[in-house]
Length: 145
Image (cartoon, rainbow, N blue to C red; front, side, top):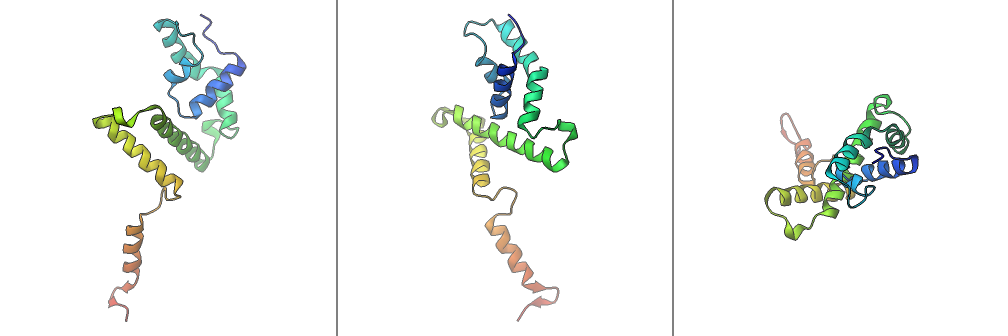
């Protein structure tokens, strides 16, 4: 098996990774169904670090290498990737078939994504904001009359 992806495949592979798919899942889209475990393991090991894949990831995440990004950009890219990974998990898992830790993981992912979509990610809860508003109405000497 030729273990390298061609440029077009590398770009597609990078997009699949950035959409949240684990490497093993992404590899499965490019290997023949009857690929050996050895070929699958070799692709999982080699493809994520292939220069064409790394170049594509860099282009799709703003055109800079990870180490050259400003802190804010690096964190933004990392969070976007993380939310995509959570979404991928929810998309590929059947909630009715989950138990235990897997169900807890799905609930955590769902809550995080719902919070993000509601524009509340990284913000205090409404109850915490209410509490802080109530505290701000009092000074060090007691309630404001």
